Image 1 (cartoon, rainbow, N blue to C red):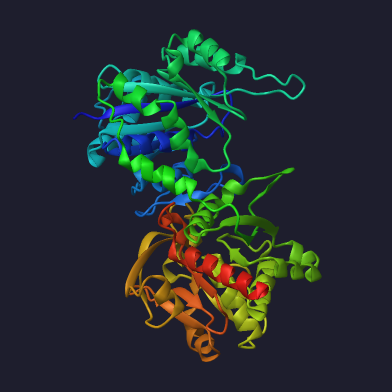
Image 2 (image 1 turned 90 degrees about the horizontal axis):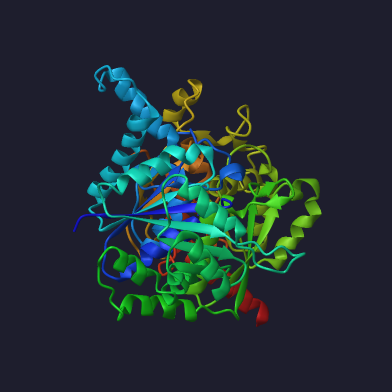
Length: 546
């Protein structure tokens, strides 16, 4: 079967949940027996998201092959259970870089290079190359931003052109506001979005209406009339308390049936896979709660919090909680607070467990070190991710090994005890200011030490693999000293001898990893370290009660 292409385009505002909608549609198609792949188009000129601030663009998602790309690829992987690669994120920067490289090489044989056809041809080639590589029945392509963005013009033109050569469908995801002073849902913004899309000679085959509440039939009829589609092709997608409900909400409105029939394909009404998904959602326990403190610094942006900076950590916590028949209440804690007011750290006693996620730069570091110390001394379950492992080692070196002012070379290059040091291969890269796509990235193996907590968490596997994104490592010169005082390094990379996992056996649950296991957590298959953390949190709660 030749590939079918579905373009998902935003209207009115960005950040509507196009990625979740795209992933949910893909899930429904999978349950119908079709193979699915997904592409995210980002119109910015950066080649990838690797050098962008989390507070500006959200989390950087790391692929198995070392791509630093848009966080929506994370939603695709979590929902669809597939492994995507760096080429599944197409940016304007990648497109122009490819074209200019070809031009310098003489590939265009002296032709004038223009937006049309050279740029649009390159966009189409990137899309169709992925379709061939993945051999997918359906290729879902989400175009970032919204239809009115000037930088999306060429991507929309490429999407329009593809209908000449391939089976193509267009889905518009638009916003219906409910102004408080009116108390009425307004359709005019989405009608304008439909008109704006029409200016690119594209009419949506399906309109997904994002709103706080369910969109009623009166408004669905009005929207259907404005773009000449059936009312059944106008879909209500209201706010929900759990994004994994979205496939069910779409299925209840026959979205998958509409899509398949538009491509001339049959819809199977008796879908066992979707029944399992529905049962999974219905069985989520909303009565037993664990309080998870996340000690970070990437969520303040003006007067608002941008939790998307840690979206994979959040989802991994949820997956683990559901697997342990409970739900997680996440409490955001700015580590700088413990530097300004050291006594306030006692609030950690109210948490069932603590996570120190990845990050860069010295801001808030001493507050994180204080957190690790408090968790170690008070036996609060602790999970350190990437930087979080390094923090736990710095704290242990200072307060247990008596290495005064021990630190990381990242935060203090002149420290007398650099227990965290830059990886040798990274020194030349930083000297030449090669910051983009140059960290230790992607999936790397680790040999686990038998008998350790990490070894048991990974079901006694001798070798595992997790994804990474870092320049610094635990300094090999200090391993012997740290282990002498009781810190256990329970996993090591077999090639570079980098310490991948560490734990403190004197605590019920105090573990860290140089990796980012949150990138491999899935709704029905939580990441082992997160699963272990939630189990430890529940045990802590039970001890309190008894």
